[in-house]
Amino acid sequence: MDASSTLPSLPARRAPGRSLHRFANPGRFLRLAARVQPWLTWPALLITAAGLLGGLFLSPADYQQGDAVRIMYVHVPAAWLASSGYAALAAASFVSIVWRHPLADLAAAEIGPVGAAVTALCLATGSLWGKPMWGTWWVWDARLTSVLVLFFLYVGHMMLVRAFDDPERGYRAGAILALIGAVDLPIIKYSVNWWNTLHQPASITLTGAPTISGSLLWPLALSTLGITLGFWAVVTARLRAAVMERRIRGLLSAQAAAA
Amino acid sequence: MTHLPYVVASYSLFVLLALGLVVSTSLRLRLATRRLRAIDPRAKDAA
Image (cartoon, rainbow over all chains, first blue to last red; front, side, top):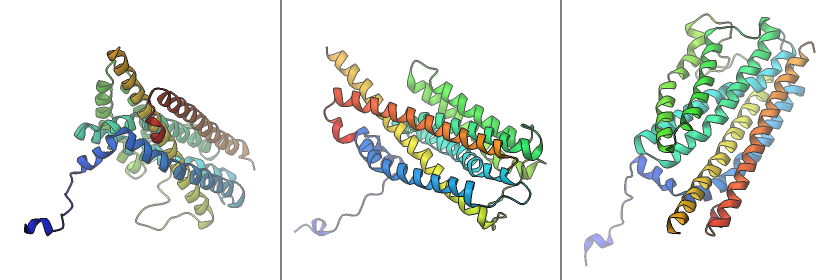
């Protein structure tokens, strides 16, 4: 008897790019995404509603800012998603350039408009918060300006991806822009430490205790979690639609070629 | 609540933007699902 036939087979070590390519199969991706979708959508709705209603009606007004502090429950999640959404866009662009993963191209293209929307919301709510607190709608300080640059990067990416007749060239150009633009993320994060800004430093850090009262923190945590889930629910749904649209184009062109 | 207009404007912007994204995405997904099912019978399970 051959000894090797009795040995249990060891799982093959796979390169990250290879395991990622399992999801390049549109059917497999669509089945998985359809299963994940309700687990993102419904918790997003419930948790966001709990966070925003808690922030509006249950949490106290700030002793200095009064009720204007309630803008935080929309502004902070939008700011977090503006940066983390761009980080995801840059990561998808990296996967696209290195492994030529077809879903990464679509993911980057679909994250772009949603990221631009939350960045616009972050800028608008920041402005609405700034007027009663700072006395001005806008100031060219490092934090505000670097977030405005992030918004332009999102818009530039959206335009570049759609600017070419050959979509592959658009995806490549967009991926390069996204990776170069990622330099803006640490600038946004540390702008309040590197320069004197009107914008306050971070109240919540990974290493230290939050400098914000627990009565204000729980609605903020809920709204941030809920809006983050909502962001990814929308991106997942857009990605599903994009995969289907690409499959439709492929099938139609195959039918046209066969006819 | 002297800052009420600013708070209301912020939450209204959020609701409008969220609704816009959800409605446009739902319509796009529904249209893509319907078109794919019309030309590819195998798409029933996937979509």
